[in-house]
Length: 438
View 1 (cartoon, rainbow, N blue to C red):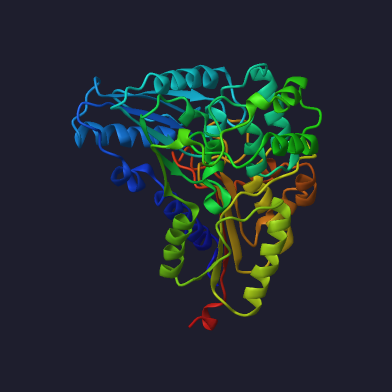
View 2: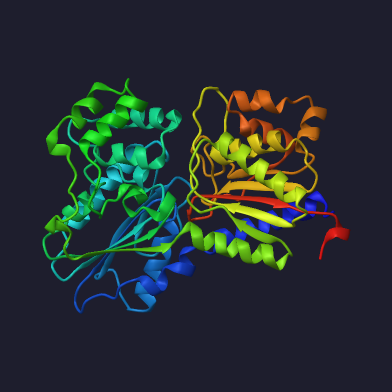
């Protein structure tokens, strides 16, 4: 049977392939629109891939189109630690997942840039996951502290990203189509997005700042009542104000806009599948849009892995999507690490089965620091090594302290910022004895 180190190497290589498939230099250059003669390109970026996207786009417009500072302007807002070097376009680092004042200030400047566009200009919006926190422009009557409070509550509640973004869109002057509404009539707008959401739901990527919003204030009120009934009074008041309804499909203000997804989870899973095949493993794709409680999904995947092992198959279970954690303890971690810990418990040292779960942006939960772990590795010796060190896996899971558990074992995945984001990546590898291989 292949040893744990070799299985871990294969898992790491699949993660790297998944990330590389979604890098800006891979997916963005051919999609960037050319400028109109005499017109400017206004580059606006938000999210964890924003720094890399603005770096690549700036280079293309300088080298391909010969644009200088007179015809190339813009602003990028990305997560702290995710900026990339640029020559002309400024990058601002801001809070994620909880917004901060830097995000508010940069978002105001972003809206001003769009409002000042001339008819021959082309606004190019580069979006990725994390943009909902980076572009922060609260509606009247809602403070930054109010937005921070409701964001923290929703993140701990077990609400899905779609549900959280429904609330965000109705509390913002930039989300839910309002960035498109900020431009003067007749100004072209192209949005190029890296998808980090289940089913590639475009309006959910960075809360859809350039797209019509199919959800309503009533939807947002119902979600706050369910997940955050103790939200600040200003939040409840804003969601009761008809003025905060978002523009809907069919609104003529979206004429002259175009939206395209340039990288998506499915393409990253395909890249990982190619690595698996090259190593002699059968890829078993479980989907790129999985949702649900991390520990429940992990239990299901453990059962399936055991079943494949019992059939003597040499395979890799691959999945993407965005899992959730309903937090009841005081530990550290994120959905990928919680999944990995629950998976280790469910597998209980089953021979020949190893796994990696990690967020493709390079961080999973944590304190908001760029060096937070992205996920964790699991192998047949995980629980045994923990027991030998006096650590009770179930107790760590009960207090939502997956980071603490894997940190003790040296099994955290720490790639650092990847400068992209196509959501969670999970691979469960099932090996079998050498003599049973074809």
